[in-house]
Image 1 (cartoon, helix red, strand yellow):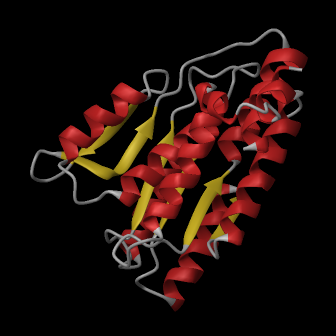
Image 2: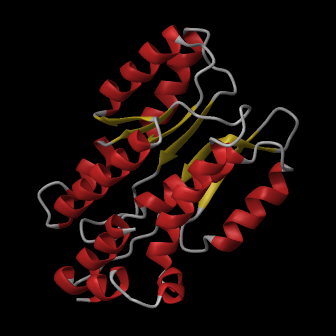
Length: 226
């Protein structure tokens, strides 16, 4: 299959040419970069899955997405990073519990758009709304049940934002957008008028794939194999 051909290719230099593999590799590389400096080191990666369930529950790709999430969890835990996933409410509770134990714990959060706003409000009410958590919401209005879900690419972007906080925000966002033309996102304006790279909203486009077995499934398998 396409996935097996990419994942098991004996010509190593050809593997990164596959964009889905490249995003998986990018996520891993940026995660390693965050851990290389004390000021960017993260304690957790959090994924609220309500938006995913709403989009694909009961459809074939739900299985591959679940396997991909398992692979992400395994990789993070191998790096001694907590990986929280589950319902949006459950994930929020785990993060708050962690922050109550360690106020300086840093991490990234990916969840539905409404849940991201609610989570930020809860953090503020608890006095935890600081610059230690990069939060992204996903606007799912354009997604369909047979759309490829760019989950790894979203996490890759979040990890890059978390790994490079000292860069000029406008230039950083412009650079990321140029490298991720298929995944639109917006950054909230900060008080100084510059984009707030720690508060973003992904606006994924519908990418319907009619050939589940040979194309849609294969795209996830490439990332799992990375």
